[in-house]
Image 1 (cartoon, helix red, strand yellow):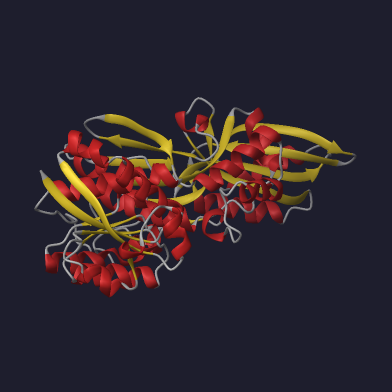
Image 2 (cartoon, one colour; image 1 turned 180 degrees about the vertical axis):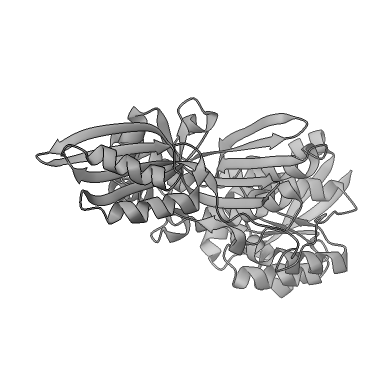
Length: 426
C-alpha cells in the first residue's frame, strides 16, 4: 500500500474541510484507493483554530521552511488564497521537490507557467482541480476524459456568489444591493465582493479552463470581463417575460476566426440547462467534436465540496510516480500565433427609455436597419405619461455594429436613455 504524508497550509473554511476529509476517511481511502494518507503537519497562524480541529502542538509548523524540511511530507496543500505569501509558500514547496495541490485560482491563473517550470525542474506534481468550480471535477474531465475531442466550446456558471445574487433578483424581485447584502449575510459574498461581482474570479477560472479546453495558453488579459454591478431587476423581469434567464457566464469558443473568451452577464433561454442552475451552484457545458454535449453540475464552493476536489488531487498524486504537465506552450504571454476574436458575435437584449409618441418605434427601427442590425423581437411598455420602455432582441450580429447603433440611438431626441444592454446565448 502506498503511503503519503500531507501538509496543509491554511486552516480556513476549505483547509478545515480538507483536514476533516483526510482524517475522517483515512481507513476508507486505504480500503477503496489503496493509499495511506496522513496529515503530518499544518501551517496556521491561528493556533486556536488548529486545536479546535483536534491538531496537537507537535503537528503545528511554525514556518514553511519547517514544513518542507519534514521528510515525511510528500504533498503540500495550499489553501491560503491570494498571490502574496501563497506564491512564496508554493514556490518554496516546489523547489524542495514537494508535490503541490492548490485551490488558488488567482495564483494559478496569474503564475501557472512559473509554477509549472519549478515543478518540472524537481519532477514534482502540480495539481489544481479545486481551483475551478469547487467540487465539480472539471479539470480532470478536460485533462483525462476529453482527449479524443477537439473541444469547440466551454460555457458555464463558474461563480457561485453572482449566481446566488442573480437567482435572488430573479425569484424574489430583489434589487442588486438587497441581494448582495443577503449573500454577504449568508457568507456567499465577501465584505469586499469586488472579485466576484466584477467578474475577476470567473475570469481567473475561464483562463485556466479555456487553456485546458483549447490546448493553448489563454492569459487573463485575453479574457473580456464584465461584472453584474450594472444589472437591475427590471431587465431580469423583462427577460423573464420574454423567456430568458440571466446568468453571469464564462464563455470560451475555439472558432475558425480565432479564440473568443469572455465573462459577462448573459441571457439564456429558459429551456437551456444552465437556466435551472440556481443559488450558489455551478455548472459547465462542454461541446466536443466527437462526444457532442456534456454538462457537469454541482456545488462551486464550500468546505467539503472544495475539500473533495483537493483530496481527489491528493489521492491521485499519492498513487502516481510520474507527473504530467501542460501539453501546450505554457508561458506568461501565451503563444503569439493564437488569434483572439475581439468583435464578438451574439444576440443582444436592449432596453430603451423613449418618448411615448407616434413614429418613435419606426425611427428606432430605422437606426438598427442603417447599421445592419436585424431585429428579432420587440416589446413596448408604457410606464408613465409620455414615457415608454422599448425592449429589443436582435438577431446574431457583431458587437461593433451594436455599439454603433447604440451611439446613434443615444443621440436621438426621442430616446431618453439606453438603460440596458445584455448579450444573449442560445
